[in-house]
Length: 176
View (cartoon, rainbow, N blue to C red):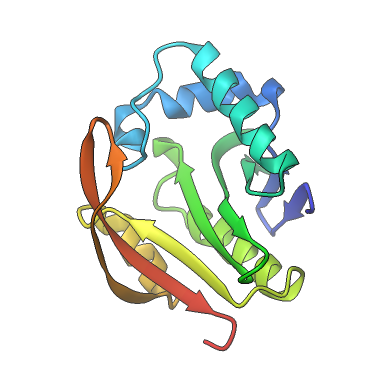
């Protein structure tokens, strides 16, 4: 699995513990974590633990998470990646979040398009999935703009912040 992907404005680099300070700032913002399946972080050690857990999944070829660097400022502005990699069925689930100060600039679209392209053209995957809370209107608008198809609602599908939540399933196929 490639550890770096580059776009016109972004560098997606495999998450490292050295990124923890920047990621903590993002993951401690309640507006950013509102639709993530984590509570807002209160200590940088939580970011370190998250990065180490994601690194274990990477070592097992089950997932990879990238820190999103804004090339112009060389700042980490979010993260994205494959929350799950299923090589048997040639599919992946993507996830992403962007620091609030960078919302509305097309950075999430740019990062997601890069993940989708890499999965289809380099991993030869057939399907990319995005599971999004029904109230996360901005994320829904984003994946619909990128031609993901709504497939339905997974009722009380996941436990998040001590409650079961619905998730809307979106997908994009290599043939789309």
